[in-house]
View 1 (tube, rainbow, N blue to C red):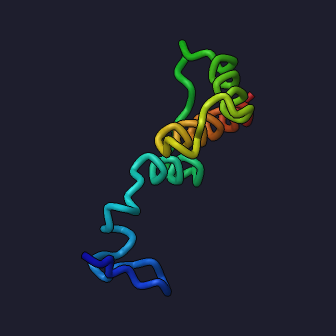
View 2 (tube, rainbow, N blue to C red):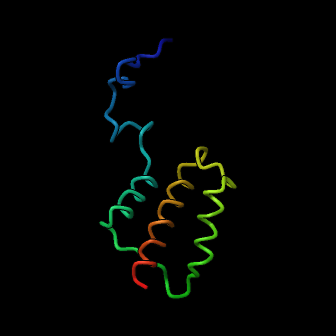
Length: 90
């Protein structure tokens, strides 16, 4: 069996990036929306910003393998955006 992927663009002609399952990243799409400011998201009253900041710092320090988990990478991006929004409100 041969792989019909076009070496020029890496596409196999069976789909476009938005519908090709190899390119679907719903967590990354959500992170994009949060980072763009199109979705208003903020820390809950009971949520500790310091705990969220610690999570982001641990991720940035390489404690988690973000390359292996796109969902975790998106979570870190969303957490960063939430912290930036919280700092902007102070």
